[in-house]
Length: 452
Image (cartoon, helix red, strand yellow):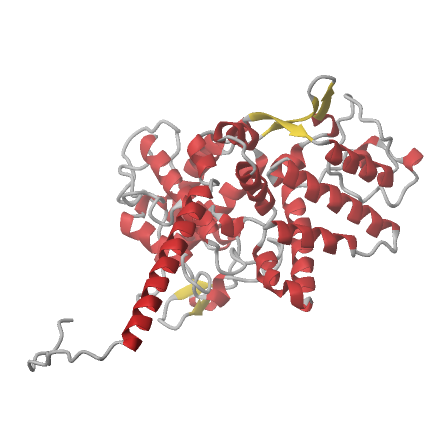
C-alpha cells in the first residue's frame, strides 16, 4: 500500500498489512487540528460532489454534517448518538480508506458495514476499541468492543440516512447507500424478540438482589431508594431512559376519575399519557421520604423525577438551594446506574446455583430491556395491539407487532406436538419390527456412488 499522504511516519502505527494509521487515535476534531492535510481532505470536492449551489449552503463535510444534525436531531439525547455514529463513520473513512464524504461509494459503505459486523469488534481491535474513557483521555477509543446487532444496525442506518440526505439536498451527486439500505444488515424482528425480555423469574430475582444492597451509609440508602424507584418506574411505565431523565416530578398528575397518569414527551416529540399504579406512586413517596421531601406531590414541583443525589446526602433539607434540588441526571448516567445494577445481579447469579442460568442474561441486559419486558407482558396479558401502541408511544403499529410473540409460541407448540407424534409413530414401528421376522432386502449396490 502506498504511503499515506495524510499522516507522517512518526505519527503512525503500522498494521500487519502495512497500513498506516495515526497514533494515538484521537477524536476527529483533534485529528483535523493535528494534521493539516486531513482538513484539506474534508474540504476537497470528490468524485461524488454535486456541482454548483446546494439547498443547505454547505461546501465542506463539516458544514454538510452540521446541516444534517440540525435537521434530524430532535432532542439532545438523539443528537449525542447521531454525533457519535457520524464521527465513527468519518474516522473509519479517514483512517482506513483515506476518504471524505464526497468520495464514498456504495462499495465503501459495504466495507463499513463489514467493519461494524466484526465478531471480536472493529479491527484492528487494539486500535479501535478500548475501555470507557473521557474524550480527553489518552485511552479514548471510538468503540468499547464488539457491537451488538442493534448497535450495528443503528450505526449503519445513521450512515445511510446521512448520505441520502446529502444527496437529496444537492451536496452529493448520487446516493451511495447500498440497495436496501440498512434493512438487510439485520431484520428488526431478529433483535426485538424475547431474547431482550426478562422472564418473570429473572425480574423477581433482580428485585431480590436489589434488597440485598448495602444501606450502611446515608449515601447508600439514597442510592438504593433511587434505584428501586427507577427500576420500578422504567418497567411499569415502559419508559426509555431519555424519557425518565427528562421527566419532572409534576409529570405525574392525578385525576379523581382516572387516577394517576404520567405525561411524557417521547421519541420524535411524540406525547403520551401512561396510566400509573398506586404501587408506583407509593414507591415514589418512599423515595421522596428518604430524600427528606414532602410526600404530597405538587403540580408546581418541576424538580427532576430522578434527581442527582450529590447535594441531598450532604446538606440539611432546610439548607438546600434551588440549584441542588433541580440537579438532573443525564440519560447516559441513568443508563450506567442500571447497567451497574444488572452487573451486580449477574455476579450474584453466578454464585447462586439455582440461578446461574441468569448470569449471561443480566450481563447482556440493558435498561431498554425493561421497556421491552413491559410491552411484551402487556400483550401477553391480553392488551390489544392498538392499546399497547399508544402505551409505548410507537409511531407505527408494525413496531408494536414485533413484540407479539404469541404466534411464534403457537408455532413452536405445534412443531413440538408434530415431533412428539412422529416420535411415537417411530417407536410403534420399531416395536412391530422387533416381533416380526426380518425381511431380506434386495441388494442395491450397482457400483455407483450415491448422488451428492
